[in-house]
Length: 240
Image 1 (cartoon, one colour):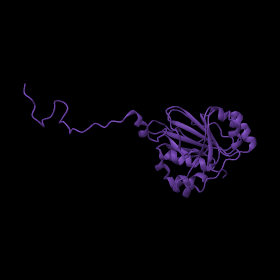
Image 2 (spheres, rainbow, N blue to C red):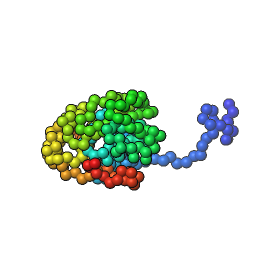
Image 3 (tube, one colour):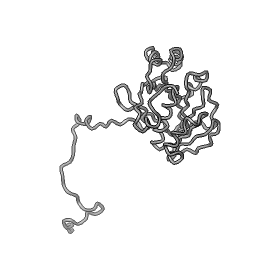
């Protein structure tokens, strides 16, 4: 049997590459290779230790989010969700409050569209074209024509704890709460099974801070607006 000449390609594997020492890591060194990466999604701010807090809004399963808070926070979330590639559909009864954002972001080219309350058409979401519907429909939002579904999430904004809030909280997978009155904080604490400290904190939160919670988990998060966001939306504010 003849031996292949040096430099001739090996059968099925191509030419042999250069010989170098292997790169190995001892088990005790593995921790040093860890990367500070959280879940995929929208960076909704930073936690108490300054680490990015990421909210996975776009999902292959129905996902409902409720935010008791200000328009400023809802608009920051919309911009950041659009930046991740989601199409943003805003159902609102106060279109002038959103038109500046839509124009600055590029409108339909950026995947942000405005619709009157009750006039949102079917969106046809998919894994390649996910949708986030932002419902800014006042304190008693009517039943939406477009509900959450695979690759289509719904974020409902309430300015304060309205009579329909309890039902929306029950339906929602995640609830965000910004500063509320002490009475509202007590009601929310009971509905969301918050501890006494978290409940009391709700009436003292500064602008831009949100408690994101389920009935099992909770995290206080502060939005640090980018220069572009501040230039477009102004400073963080709870009331509009």
